[in-house]
Image (cartoon, rainbow, N blue to C red; front, side, top):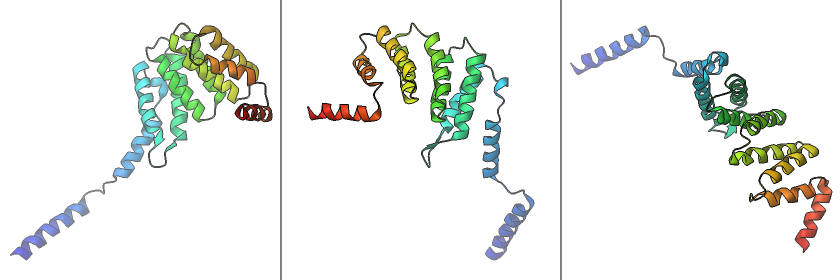
Length: 194
């Protein structure tokens, strides 16, 4: 009797599995990701685009390899550019553009990072926390070896925030910015010898 029940249950399971379509959760997940990446940015309103960027930010880091996903970074930059041009009065504008700046930097698009960062600086010039963006702009110019622009950016920080804790570092950088790598190394060696 037990054998008959066992055979009946086994047969029912076998028949059921043969009649139903195979489930492919991996395929469904891939399709969902493809749909996510194909989102039409033009069709999104302010908050939808901002929340889309929030989701992109969560997906940017590959937890297995701890690498940034280039595809998500590109989509983040495109989203920030769209947000910056389309939603000029958004309450989330500054943070949306910041996300774009980080994405541009991750993609080694320093000119675009500076362009977006300058939007933030220009639109928030009276904000006392704008020094963060100003420091970043000076750093990026310096990194790109655009010495004159870096000097101008550093001098602007010194003039605008003369009592900020980072000003001594900025003044020191102004003194060394025109030195070559070799001259800079010699200077550091002399300072360490003292």
